[in-house]
Structure formats: C-alpha cells, structure tokens
Length: 316
Image 1 (cartoon, rainbow, N blue to C red):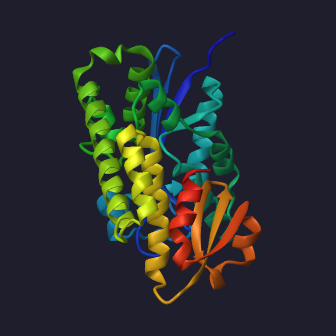
Image 2 (image 1 turned 180 degrees about the vertical axis):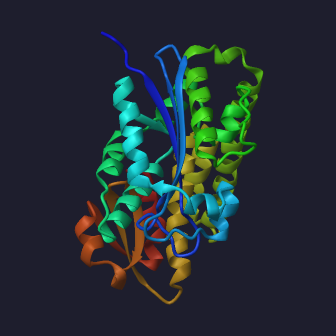
C-alpha cells in the first residue's frame, strides 16, 4: 500500500481585545509537504485579510510580527485556502498535521465570521475537516511526560526559524516537520539535548506534585487529628502504606476545607461522583438538584462525626 505525503501546518489567528475563539480569523497559514521519507517537496506561506475585523490589535501585531499594511493587501482566507486545497489534492494529502488543539477552534471562528458577513467559506471548511492534532501522539512516541512547546522542542533538534522568530506560520510548520521527523526516524536515546529536556520535565512534574502534596497535607492537618485518626495515621506510616496514607490526607483535606468554609454549619453531606470519579463534601442545604442527581452515593453527617466519616471513606 502506497504511503501518502505528509503535510505539516500552522495558522496564525487574530487575538487580543474582545477576540475569542468564536471571533478569531485567519491571518496567515504555513505548510510543509514532504514524502513519507521526510523529503520536502513543497512549502507554502500566505497571509490573509480578516473579513470581519481586519484591524489587528497591538497584541496580535507583537505576537505574529505581521504588519497592518501586509494584512490589508492580503486575500480573503477562503481564497487562500482554495489554493491550499489544490496543493493537498496535488499530493494526495488527506490530513493537515498541527500541534495542539487550538487550530480547529480558530478555523471554526474564521468560518463563523465568514458566515456572519455572508461570504463563501467552502474552502475554509475543507481545510478545517483535514486538520489533525498530532501533539499527543508525537509526545507519546518520544516518551515525554508532558507536552512541550514547538519552539522549545524543535530547538533540541537544531531547528532555528529563518524568519527569526516563532509565531510565524511557516516557521512553526517547519518546526513541526522537524519534530515529527526526529520522533519517528532518529534514536532519541543518543540526543543529549533531548534527554536533558526530558529530565527537566520530569523534575518539574515531580516538584509540582511535591508542592501540591505538601499544600494538601498542611490543609488536611489544619484541624488536629482525633485519637482514632491518629491511630490510623500511625498504622499506615509504620507499615509504609504510602498510597493509603496519601488517600487519607487527600480525603481529610476535602473535609477540613468544607468545615472551615462553613464554621457555623453542623450538617454536611459526603457525595461521590463517577465522571470523573471523585468525592466532595457539601453543606447539607447546598446539596441537591443536579449534584444530588449526578452523585452515585451520598451520606449525611454531623460536624462532630466528620472524623468517623473520613475513616469510613478511607477504609472502603
């Protein structure tokens, strides 16, 4: 079976001020098309003139490096994407690979603005339907513990944008091509810069986790342990049952938080939810409606009973 050409893409959108995903419009698009062996066969770059709000905000100008005169002289994005669609057809490309989950909402915003102004959006829609986010799959292929920005990740593979900066659509598309090629064709275990980046990410995650656990522990122990809780705590500690100890701290933090926020309240409810699986402590008068309907289990308790409820929950 013949492998199809690959297309790496990036888009820059209007931003700043009142502009959100529903109002975003295309400012530029960059493509890198290559063979299955990563031989580049064509590059494409074009700016586009927003149809609804063509004047860029200062934030947008500073981020993208684009100027108002070059945007004013540009074609409508639907016309630009008609040319992009022809390129995809020429090389038999069915997917435009992008990094992250912003591009589809941004393109949807551009379609919204064309719809509102009564302009043709058929070519934008074609491109929208081709966009495929490859960030998670590429991160997994590399064995990284979390997502990394295009600029930081491509730098470890020696990529420097010819434009002088990122947030240029063609530069970012070239960077994405560089990352994907490295992920699927090189031995990352021999790349010292990549290994250093990976270790830095692991250390950062560990530090954030440790800080969160310390904060949760301080919160959980803001109220003194009862005699029964202390005995349970000592039991877990002496036996080295770290997972159960962490669970006890997390559950108690939820109870202490709820009790501290309502110092005059005597009646509470412990509720369990399945999507995502979690427990939550409510003041009795606040528990009802959608929360009660969505809970898979709930139990009422008095303030004086909170320690027994914690132990019961932890021993489930």
